[in-house]
Image 1 (spheres, helix red, strand yellow):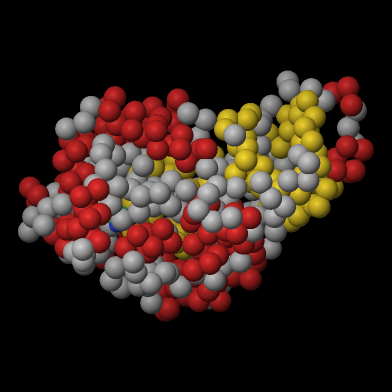
Image 2 (image 1 turned 180 degrees about the vertical axis):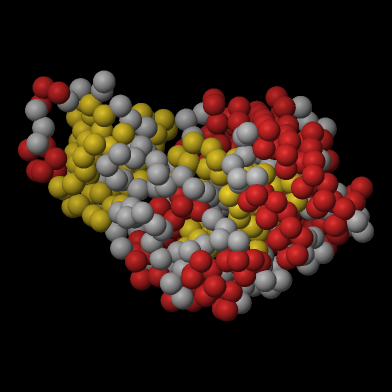
Length: 415
Ligand code: NIG
Ligand code: FE
């Protein structure tokens, strides 16, 4: 049994009351100017004003006391949407995009996601493990203590299972909590060009049962987009996943408004992600259904598209989560501080709203809020010490990370 107290910290956290913080509540944080956090065996046992936390404490039972010198202490970041398992980068495609070729055009020509599929097919599990681990450790150093990682560069049973196995190994060999998502319908593989319905049938009859047997992925995702998968195909696949006991989420309305946000509401998905082109009626449907809107501003930045309408979504009482979408194509960054900066300076979110977006709401978006996403008693002691006095430092100090120290289950894992 080990008891540690962190004192003299400016603490900021959303308070988990059993659901994501939506609309006007998105920006409500609990804060203590001179706060303390007491933890035992990796879990939070008390948090509040320092004098209250210390008054209740027998000094003899404390193994370690740390003075945070008035620095800001916030929950560890939860990155709820990444494609961090891949085999190689796509720098030449970045150059193509810079010279004007649209992202979906590159995919149509057999590149894009399909380049990454080729690379994964040629990679061993050890290669994938090494690359994914590198991505995950870089994210950890930037404050991400919990992360979702999708498969989706396999597109056949063997390679999807291989990716999920590599993700699982990384989760066992790094401090980061990793939630794996099956994204077998990320693109139409070349062998199924013109036979997309058959591919979805194969995904339902062959891939999904194999993924369920393997037991690593707890949720299923699909890329619904013009020239990729339709809403009807999304409905078929995700309904089959729900019938097998999986939770669902989807890449919705990223480039074109196909109605993915409406499908997410209909299926009561955990989240609908991207939403750059989502319409207001479907935003309202998502709010009624309690679906988290996961926004990926680094993708809009990298694709040079208008940002998702976070303010409209908050006015419509949606809960907004923020993620990197880290992948070798549309958004290559592991940095949640960068995402926070974009959300605050380019999407009009307040620093408090952005903090909730990268912690509590992000945890709900991947079904992990029972253990992470806020500094509530009973949750894991996953937190960050920032080089500043408030969460605003994360957006204010641009282009670098203000994350000075990272703690996972109470243990310092990066500084
Ligand atoms: O979320 N849009 C689909 N999937 C990813 C990109 C994946 C890739 O380009 O490799 C996204 O943007
Ligand atoms: Fe994505």
